[in-house]
Image (cartoon, rainbow, N blue to C red):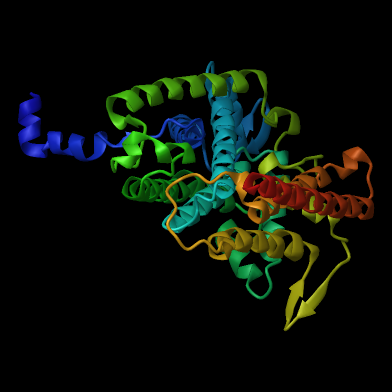
Length: 412
């Protein structure tokens, strides 16, 4: 049987060319696998949920009351014997995927693995992170509860606040005014078809580039005999060793996700109920808290016009600030002055400026996450702004001199 397939598909050549490639054994490379396996889990659970979900806002009866069909279908999913746990697994898989991509990008940044020739994959990774956030946002609305509509409305007003073209963007994304009967079908299409296709395309592109350029390796491998003999990559073959390790790791990750989904519930849509005039007390998931916290610090009456375009707090916190962050991340490979190709992981402690910049930026963003809880912490926005500035300044002033001192001692 194998011979028959081999004669037609040249499987032996395929194995020699691709399946014999070396996979690094450094544990940080599992971050990419966590993201990939979480995405696979999302697809599997999403298929189950999509078969039972009704993307419509028409009013249908549910327990003696008339509610939107989307909301009613999610309640009925939760009532199935395995429905609620699968919905929770879907939710937590998204959390794990976003966290893994973020951690993966941090590893790449701090080890300077974005340098020549890997700049393209750095941008692909940023695209994957951005698309994952967009997928999470479009999934927010689908339960169509009071919580979902309130959370999504924040995104609507941010899109509408874009100067000059805000009405066009909000109409394109939300299918008109929000909420409307067309918004849920539009978000359902984006969430289950367009965004997953784009994610699959970027994942495929990422893997193709990775196979072509190979992984970066720990610096300790430079002096090993295998590297000196011209075999730069040191690790284990993809097949069968790494394949079996990956399969085992997938089931371990699935176990962790299931346990998390079992003991940590979602926002209970039955408690919030269908959309109503009242606005529930809500806070976005952790990956949107940076923007949410920044918006909390902007005075509500701050508004002005530029060339006919109106700038509002939503414009500053939801459009200008995220655009600035994206620009900073995109400029990282261009600002790094290293010209030579890099194939080995660089110790972050040996890069004082870039490591200090990363630490300072991390402290700044973390303080913005804390800012999202100023109502709980009973801190005034002006006071929180002072805390953000002080914490960021201290991180810069402390980290850079310490790293410089460490490098001077190393040189000595």
